Image 1: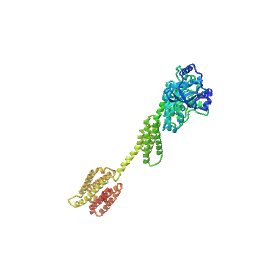
Image 2: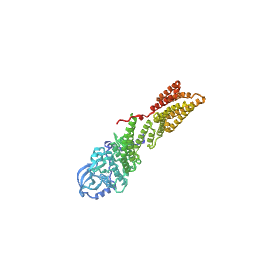
Image 3: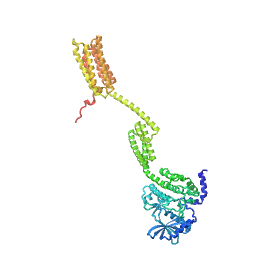
Image 4: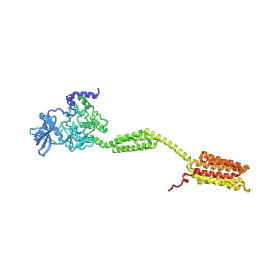
Length: 631
């Protein structure tokens, strides 16, 4: 058997006298037994008797209690309506009189806006005490605490929870003031709170209140003598069960009752309940309140702390409870923002899990992410300690990081990671790995793009057309000039060939220098330029070799056709297949000059001119020959 179970067993043996009351009506107040007045109490009653009668005209009954009755009255001296509390017939002994008067004396000593004012205390014509109270036209809090419609209609409460917390905070003020005067209420519950017609809040029924200080007047019951069970079982703190020696009643008792009242606001019923009196007493001793999942966690934490079984673990003061509740109300707007942002985050998660067109889904995802991030940021700006908002913001960012990593945009993921308060090692590792992979992909793409540009035949077509066409045209004229000088006896044909090939090389070099930016921009242009240069050098070597070998000058002329055929064929195969006609023309010219050697210069002119036409036809820009649109 646990220590708590032994405590319940031991306490239950002494509490069975109240078992029937606890079981039948756990929300009713248990009043400690009335004892005969002490000598100090009798002196207090004697002073009351010397005070004389109070002039009040009694009218109808407003309510009745265990030993008292409250009537409507008119205070003659001021002509105002008041509430008058007197004793019922059968409860007019000295002990009952002292009990009534002690409630009045305690209440009268506590002048506070949230405590029922006592206007006067005196005797009626029969010598019985009259307690003249402020008449409050309103309703008990217990009647509307769970009725949003009634709270809205009577007090304009748009939010029932906020309204109830506002009432409870005013009760906290009343309790804090009473504690500052050394008074403990011992019966705080919604039924003992009255709300006036204009929203005034009053803590009533100080009938079992005790004082922590003995002023030797005999007017106040003392906490040091409170050994019997007293209070409302459904709300009780463990020390209120009695039998403690010395008694443990103190301000911490009222703090527990404030927490129990907050529990009822959140749950809809008092904290201690059960099928039997033993179950209720066990709940009081355990004091382990359980809250529904939908209850605000911050308020649940306040109630739990206020309702600790051990007094030293509770809030230090009633004002601390009020401040905690005020903090929640300030934070509530932040919590509401976080809740709405969390709804957006749920939508974001569903979108990211869906299948759709990537670009459209990304735009929609960032729209939702922006909304939920803004909401979480605003919630944190209102309340930096809002852990719900902080966790929601981090979760939304992590979802987007995963999304970007899957898409392959690690840089976007890295930017998102920078928004985290602190990224975990696993997130850092994934983002770093993604960045390395993305950089490698981009390096390969850049290389492919560079290769693509290098091999793009469209780049430099205008220059190739102009340079190739011009060179081929000049090269077509050169053989005709050579034809004129070849038959003159004073000219050496080998020298003419060398001069013609050398001049062609110089002319080609000049063209290359003039158009070098375009001719070196791509691999195609560079290869073409190199091929033409190599071809011209080989021609010179052909002519020089023939001269040194003493061959007839016509020999290199014939084989030049074969050389040009091979060069043009290589260009057609490797660069531009549409230049194949020029290659075939050079091949046909080769066979022609073998048969008709004397036509070699004319064949050269024709083949080179045909090459120029082929070059212009193949590499001309499309817009060069466009016709203007008709107007």
